[in-house]
Amino acid sequence: VEDVSDELLDALKEASEAHSLDPLADLPHVYVPGLSCGRVRRAFVRDLNKSYYPTAQFRPERLRVAFGPAFLLEVSRGCSYKCRFCLARQIYRPMRVRRLPRLLEILKEGLERTATDRVSVISFAASDHPELTEILESLLARGVSFTIPSLRVDRAPTRALELLRESGQVSVTVAPEVASERLADALGKGVYPEEVIELGRELRRLGFSRLKLYFMVGVPGEREDEAAAIGKLAREVRELGFSRVTVAINPLIPKPHTPLQWAPYVRERDYRRRVELVRREAGRGIKLSGLEWREGLLEVAVARGGPEVGEALASASAEGRVSRRRALLVVKKLLKREARPALGYSLGAELPWEVVDVGVRRSEVVKEYERFLEALSR
Ligand code: SF4
Image (cartoon, rainbow, N blue to C red; front, side):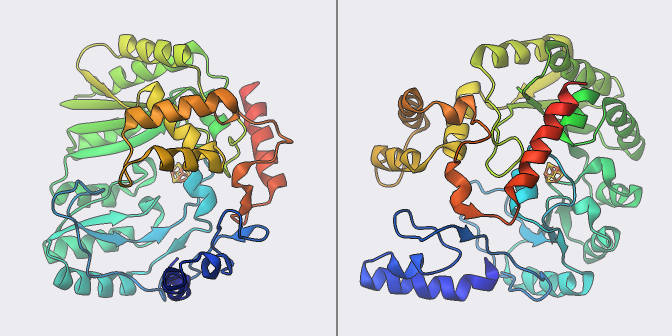
């Protein structure tokens, strides 16, 4: 929102002085239930090199923050991959990069103004940044330690991985999402099990000793043997000699605006059974973590419910907070009346999130969903 932040702040000020949301509803990028007319358009920055960047970053002392207490260096925004389950791919289009000269300016100023000597290189796919190696080399040259939380390691240049090791990092996270070629094709992630093994070998050769793997269970149409294959793959990776392999298993949450937005959320007994299959197949020595089914249910209700979900959660909250337990009770009650956020929507249904135009045609999303279903039938 950097490019529209001035008008947004002005409207917020006006709204608070007038005790009215009208000034916000007048903006083309803000949706105010009951006041906005028609769909609102997603605001996005066209050129990251010309946009504002916050170089004085304040990190709340007593709160655990994403990416830890590091200076956040955003090197790109959006993602050029086409994973059909991914919200980021849809709502942060198109892929834009910040070029090296601008990044060096930001870094210089950021390290002066933010009390840290640690940098987190953030983006959805840092591996696709054309100057990733140069960025990491300049960080190393400055003597700052760095991490790249969401590197597509399978696509990262070897030199970038070497630099990561030189910076002292021993642990890497990879998100194959599934361990079956059929599901990988259907989801469009394009990471096959044999590539994960190959990557594991390469990481061991470079000296990485810990690996965290992210998987999803409950992809519509997933077979039990495909879930069990996750455990088998994790075991094979462990046998490559990593001192620690952690496997995070989460239920697939069908997200708004994505080609899977109509799909059902996995049933509880299927989810439990599949996680158990993974556990059994993985065997000892592999730590499993991830969301419980009911946490996923809460997420799916918030993601795919209508305005009533927000209203009910707001009424259940005290001082702006609502416990997870209470939120779950609220959501379960709502789902008894309107089950579609969990069971899925029909293709012709009006979807609550279509009040926001993210810049992707519905026909395009439908086509992608059909491709997903077609790939499943192979
Ligand atoms: S690579 Fe990651 S961020 Fe990019 S589309 Fe796939 S899941 Fe989304």
